[in-house]
Amino acid sequence: MLTSHSFTVDPPGRIDFGEGAVQRVGAAVDSLGKGRAFVVTDAGIVRAGIIDVVRQALAEAGIEVDAFTEVEPNPSMSTVHRATEQARRFGDAAVVAVGGGSCLDAAKGIALSAAGTGSDAELDFAAGTARTGLPVVAVPTTAGTGAETNGFGVIADTEAQCKVYLGDPSVAPRVSILDPQLTWGLPPAATAATGVDALVHAVESLTSRSRHPVSEAYAHQAVRLVGRWLPTAVSDGRDREARAQMLLGSHLAGLALSLSGLGLVHGIAHAVTAYTGAVHGVALAAVLDRVLEFNLAMSAPQYAEIAVDLGVASIGAGDGVNAAAAIEACRGLTEQTGVRGTLAALGCTRQMIPHVARTALADPVTRNTPRMPSDSELQGLLTAAL
Image (cartoon, rainbow, N blue to C red; front, side):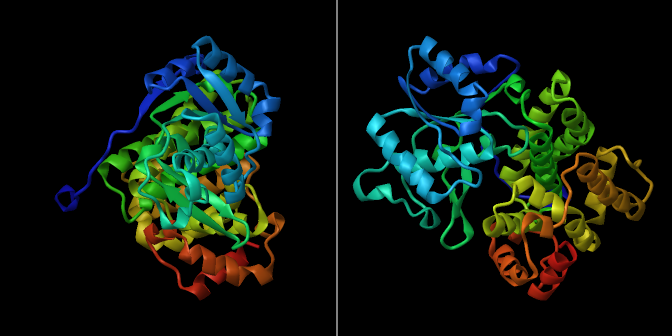
């Protein structure tokens, strides 16, 4: 019932969507009152030539540019600290994040850390900070993470083998440049992995304990778009409509998760990637259907709605029938796009299972799962997914 809900929604930053939107990145930086841009990206974006497009657009707007191009998948705290030192030498600037979720997450950490001085260079992300970060402009080049919708990021603590959360509203992107053209060259495997990430964002948002009508509205539309267009984007990466729809679906899923939080699928995937270095979306796909089955008793009405969104059931067919159809459809999408595999294939061993389970249960995102597993239940689920 709506009368049982109480929630607050802060409007996100400005969205500039459309083919060619990247040409307006200079105007975005200028709108923040900055004459300099510290670009954060990775080697793949450099090789693809996207960084050259961004640099040119910034230069044409009279924006001075420096770039850190060494962000790795699952970025580490040491990488953030190295980039922070470079950003501080460059001086007052907007941070322009260009790339996938790893680049956007790293940029948020850099924007927070670079705003400090002296001993603050070694920012303790886990402890949080009252500091106001440098303004961030996001230019996502994948359709999956939705990281441009919020001020939160996930950074790897390689020594502790866990993920550390950072976050502050001040580093939520003030402007997000959503240009479908920047996703045209994404290979099928990466398209599938990031697309599954968007799907899981939406599905977990719809079953989260913290969901509410606004997050549900975003998430339902995201499920519809991703379910419809992900297979096409994987099979034909030059399909302009598929790329545009996936970028929009990813963004809507990001808006949903920013309001509702996520759940156990992400808690497990964070733990798996911390121990094995696996691709995030592939780790999600390895356990998605098993977690959905585990949560079925608590989430059948929501699954039934997801089945309708995915076009595999009709309204009124019954929650039980539709819920089963939703699980099968999610499993089918991961199989059709070639992203579903086993945990063992990702490097997870039986000896790791107790550690992965413990880390996943301690992950803050897991708190929103509709049915909290015991340690033994989760170890059983993970063992079955090997």
